[in-house]
Image (cartoon, rainbow, N blue to C red; front, side, top):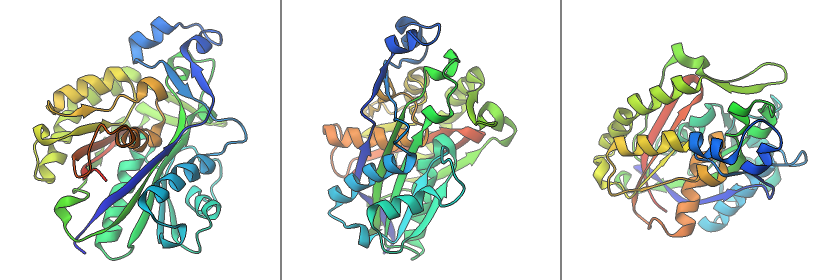
Length: 314
């Protein structure tokens, strides 16, 4: 095998929906204020009895079913999350236990909002190197657990959810997961953070906005080049769903003029590591993209890390 490919995707969101009107009863805000600044209208919030690994396991089960695979056929589980409450067992081990897997390798990847694309690249590398044949890659976060619900600048942004992909060995590298373009800006690492006791999400919003809209278009175009494509070749662009006021200008500046642009942030809020697989899975489910279409996935956020690759739609 000379490459890897995504054979199926799946997603899951908690049943409870928190609207902008609901938030207006909790903090000094309004639907008009929220939509004008971040473009979000609703978000899904998990209950106290819905831990991160449960969200992840639901999305994973859907991806496995779509791929026609059983849990026993997976030999590596990667969970991208920054909201695990315990150091051990990790989320990947807990997901494997929930799904009844007999003995896969299990690893968590904490790169916050860029976690899923980092984990996807890790899965691709593991398959190419012969370390795994079938990998379950999950992005899952329960941002409601690390949110200050009295801070209107952050509580209006967040949502909970999970998305998953099944990655398998492929005969041709050109028809699967493209080379990753990744990196970070360590000196700006504090611009997005989850710190303290209890941990709380905070960010320097203007700094993140300026960096994302000015620097990331170049990185995204380079990810396309690494895949042997131009932005005009893309069928869809799935960026980290941070804020509609970041997603829309960034998509324009990439130059993907023919692409569907994922805007799931409007309905789901910022779900951190879950945002890319969640939005991608919905595009697939809705038929907005077709099997074999080239799709750019690009994550960015905490640590001011970024990672992106072009994948072929399952």
